[in-house]
Image 1 (cartoon, rainbow, N blue to C red):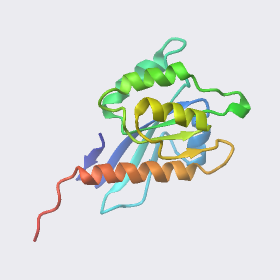
Image 2 (cartoon, helix red, strand yellow; image 1 turned 135 degrees about the vertical axis):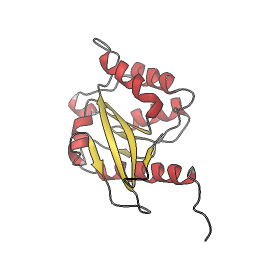
Image 3 (cartoon, rainbow, N blue to C red; image 1 turned 60 degrees about the vertical axis):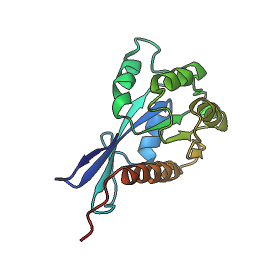
Length: 167
C-alpha cells in the first residue's frame, strides 16, 4: 500500500522488478538509485521505489526470495522481465511461487511484463488479473510499462482516499 506523506506532499509506491533484464528496464526508465520521481499530480509528487530481483528469487542462497517476501506487505506493483532472444528465460516455477507468495491479498496488484507474451499469459492466468502492459525487451519502449503502472497506481490510490470537505 502506498505511503502518503501529507507534510512532504509525496506518495511513495513500491515496485518489484523480477527477472534477468530488470536492470535494462530501469536504465531505460532512467531510474537513479532505485527511485523515480514523477511530476506533481493533484498537489502530490508520486515517487516509485524499484527493487530488482533475480528471475528465480529463491534459487541459490534464497536471499532475493527472502527480500521479496519482506516486501510483499508494502508492495504496490510488480514487473516481470525476460528476454528469450538473449537466452534469459523466466522460471515458471518462480512465477508460480510468486503468485503463492502474493496470494490472497496482493495477487491482483498492477502488473506489467517487459518480455515475451508467454510470460504475460503465465502471470495473467496465475493472478486472474490482466497484465497492464507487455513490451518486447528489444524495444526501448519502457515508458509504456511506466505509464500503465502509474495510471493504475494513481487510480487505486485516489479511489481509496477520503474526498476533500465541501467548502
